[in-house]
Image (cartoon, rainbow, N blue to C red; front, side, top):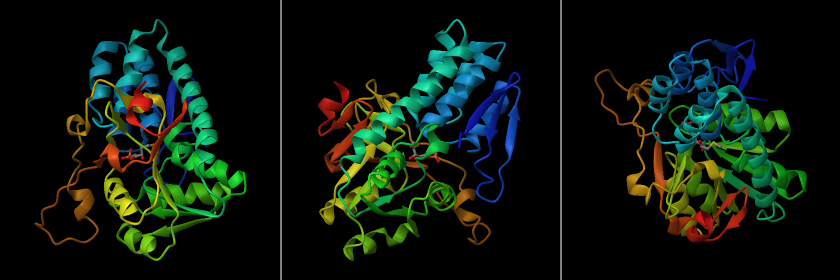
Length: 308
Ligand code: MRU
């Protein structure tokens, strides 16, 4: 399972909007095609959009202009700007994109290995959005951790929040869990508190789109609510992310740009014509609600250790 592949001078993107109903590969011959795919979530997940954007730089004639356009596609995941800058600075952007993809896969492996040690025997792990292979190009971040815990015989169940409005949890996390043989159960986002209250969850683990220098962490909208609920119920709340998601230049969560998406994504399931909606794609979980950050360097119990 890979989100992108380079074939004969074009970037092919597995269209995640169509999953799980259909496996359709989009052929992107121009950087603008890749920017569109990122904007419309054909490719999504912080590491994966960074990888796709780095390949897109390799497609461009005017690389500085492409870099500006690609970075503007989605504002919250810092991996996007980070990978574009790396490709732009490289003598051979294609080789650099390949190197970024390989490094992200290696980081996932290290995250999964380090994080699995935190998962107790028989654990039921709640997660949100989708943080697996299609979001990273490797084994995943949060999903990689539970995958390795399962391999080591300690995971009882993934409890996946469906992740309104675009249902990455329902469509992608459940699909990937089924493909790799992870026991998983889907709940509506609003059922998370009740599941914790009933003692059906042992920990929460999520990915990240940007981690500020003080540890405040932006991830899919709804993550903050899970962290508050976890604290109330005395459950550990973990963030799993590669170092490419840590943004030392952003001092705290208040400075993280939060993408506001089309209100129609919220309204189209049946709101009356003329209804209004807001649609922030991410929220910020303050560092004090995070038990530990898991990166390729290990388990960090404090933000100062994380950014060291
Ligand atoms: O809007 P999306 O689907 O790109 O949001 C993705 C997330 O919030 C993920 O949790 C995050 O990017 C980490 S992916 C390993």
